[in-house]
Length: 260
Image 1: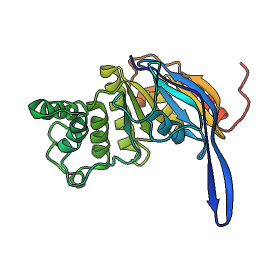
Image 2: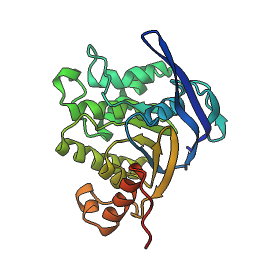
Image 3: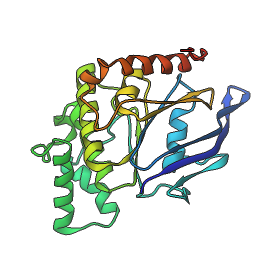
Image 4: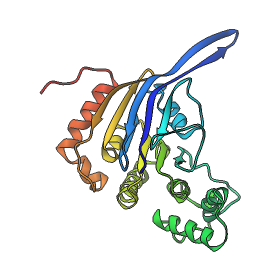
């Protein structure tokens, strides 16, 4: 199981600008659930609270009020039931790709041959079977992100949290990794919550899209595309894609829903 729920999550903090102190409401009573095996996208304008919600779900930040649960157990801090993939891969530059994946496993207590075998297995899962001995500077941006995904998956989390994981990549690499993520999800059935600014990406990948504005959930929009899902290029050609993308666009821009 891997159900994650945000329940009335609120986050307030103060921001000092010169001599002035401003109160900032990053999140205000945010509630939604990502069901076991589901992919949910968080989307909205910059500063709407998407990444803050994700970091609270991971345990990297604490909520002012409300709570996050994974399978009913409240999140108090970071834990191995959740894995995180950041916008930049954040690989340790002095380690090889394999050693970067092994690092998280070592922190979990894994040792010996099983450590090396597990790391190799997850590098193979993300298509990097022959790149384990390369250091980050020897890898393209897309390959580095795949190492980051392998590192997060290797600890076998119930929930995978992704903060704009493809946002810094060129369009072609981004579409390729979207297809790979769909394949990975079909094989692993991991629960995934990811943040994106890209409307197309949200529709291609997600089962539901949570639209946020000004620290609140504005609307949740289901994506009527079956799984296993086709490759991103084929998905974009379907009429359901265009209609759902338009619904999300209207919600992001705070426009009323169209009436059919």
